Length: 297
Ligand SMILES: [Mn+2]
Image (tube, rainbow, N blue to C red):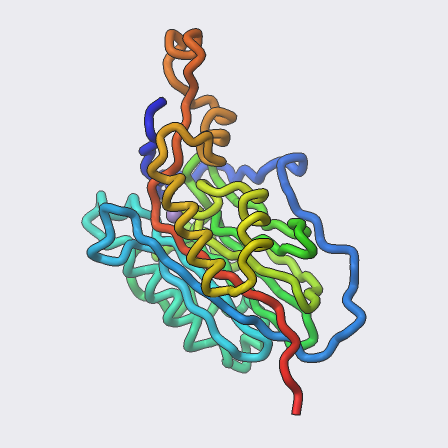
């Protein structure tokens, strides 16, 4: 019955073995339908960021950028909040990482590979801190390349269904894989990589864990099916996540995951029929990309 307020963890010393989620828990399914039309595709993009209520004045610790280069580039980094305990502003690392990635999008060596973009942006970042990060790059041909480190996420919706989903990478509950200023962290080599063929009418929903810990996939499908406009859809999804995050009775994806990992209310409350519920207070970033066919002169 209590709202969850577990802090996200810094990487421990020494590092634990890298536990990947078992295949059964992954929800990855590359769409089988190959679009026949390979003309120039791009995104109509909407973004919305709602900071953690206690971090509203500073803007929170999520950072993102979008670029119209080629078919479009979408990226989110989520600063690991545990750095505040070391007197480090957790927002600096993700912000610099995203600024560097934005500057490097057109770099020749990147050559439209999001993993190389991660590598170069990470190498260029000098702030202290760490962050989860996801980058998706769309080629005009329709190929979407994704590199993901940690628990930001991406869904692809097609004809009212989720046809692709990234899987979060965690060392243990609430300690995601993270790019770090410290040697102990993960690198671009640890990124989950995927390449998906998109077609006109597909919708990309990308978010920090503040979205996916508070909103179920079926709710994302429902919002996207009702709201066509990307800007409005991103706002609606962020507001839904924000409302759930402060609802102590909502049985959120985060509460479900916590119970699966063995966290719950005390036994004497459980026998009264109570259970651990509630959303997760967090910074919430949502990027919606509607795949459109670009006008070709
Ligand atoms: Mn977060």
